[in-house]
Length: 448
Image (cartoon, rainbow, N blue to C red; front, side):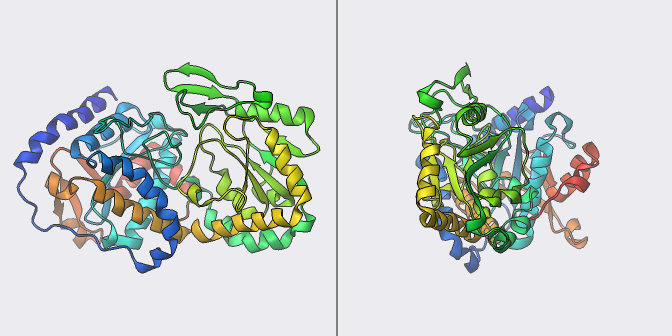
């Protein structure tokens, strides 16, 4: 691992040398504009510009910044991140060794594989619409670095991540659980059945929450994510320069079960199948170690979602309007008491509560579909590529082999200045992943 780390750091030093000596590539690749059907999801793309604004204002994402991002945030630095590139419409894993050592990364390899299958799906769906781009994603549950707002800051790293607060420079992407838990087939496609099988009048007027008792990780200096308990009690304990741990779920469990069972059915021990949540009128969403993906599943149930105002957000959260699609509770700077107020309000305003529940459900049905998510990825890559100050294929003078084309695999990148190994994603999954974790591919449930 240490050798891999040093090799990746060497990329940073080599880039400037390669840049000045590269001959021009033969034919500059131009990605096609997004297909017209993606226009119907325009509202969900707002987070893309919000996340990229920082990099645009600081002069764009340079080759040097990308090299540092690869060095610091990927497996070579013992991080749960992976470097990936689209070159001439095809997707590759970027690394410094011919066979990556995956075993130390455990279940994160499953998450990487789910995302890599998303990239292959995008390659199949959109092909020549995909621009040349290099990027890094990270699969831990929380962001770590705060944004450095000073002009020209060099330590804002463009890492793709499924959750963050407004204080972090990460770029939001869809959560891997959309793909690993059959979100389209098991949830969106069953919305009519959820509403039919348990009509609103038949649902119990309780707020229900089921969760594991993970502690919440927040940055001590992130003003958006600080948590207080009942009565304004302090919850969070600082454990390091970039980490405070807040036992949010444990506190909720103890508080609710000690005093408020008449309105809250909260448990960290009694499991409940997801479709059984539709038996209750009110569903309480509380984030976990960082952003929890459970919200997008709860929205499909047709019940009123009471969403913790944790400060963490996903790529689509800007679409959710308080009082229109959900009720905000446990707001920043206060304790959980307003959960009780929300339940009391909903019981007294049953029709309004039902309208909000259906509006949240309809939003998910429109903007979180398989097609909508694919279009989000495409728009993200096109906007992200426009933020790069370089075209990766031109800059690295990547050459391609026609052998793969003859075998029906498409052209394969075989050489790139400054990058030691580029491996087509399908081959990376077949060789590196399957060799290290033989059962992973057969056990991984995945759908677009």
